[in-house]
Length: 255
Image 1 (cartoon, rainbow, N blue to C red):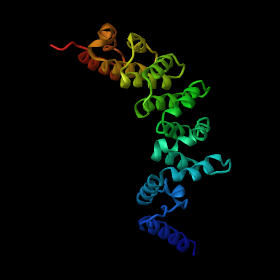
Image 2: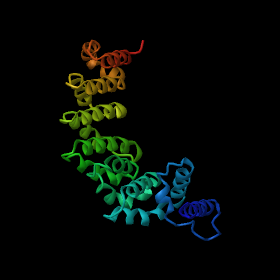
Image 3: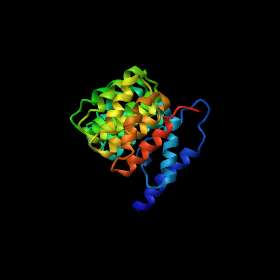
């Protein structure tokens, strides 16, 4: 009997998705999409995502209600966060509620990702999260700031100093993300190249590798890094040595 009821519910949801909205009427506003965004059935998940996209800001009441409910199941909270990713800047009114999920280890990555899609107002809570005692919160928040820089967009002068400062973070993952996004953004003054040269001397291979790769994105303008990259090309970690060698080639002036 339970199987029949569930099957009927899914049929009803899918038939409602397929039915065109009558002229002048809003699309369906049921909340079944919240339960199906993470369905193991790819078709159901895709249909739920399509529904959220079509709802846009009209999905916000359910997103608000879910994020504000202390008894909400983690999977439903994750679905609400995923909905914020889907509707992007239209979810900006929920920025504060999404940011409140950052300290929860089960939701940190999803909340940070959602904020990276929600517009420039998400920069402030992400920046504040960089002072967290939890290295995972700092790492994911920094990663999302790097993504938000291109999506919002943000002023380079607001973002780059945070990345440079994070190159001295006590956590390996944070330093690696900082080096990676310094390379992706490849903007700023000479202090950026200096920070990445220092990264080549990091105790952790992950950071040295990210720094070597990032320097290559600056091209000949980072010529001052050539001696450090030559030294890094002999790094005991083969991946660091390889990336240093690749970046050396990229830093050569055009002939």
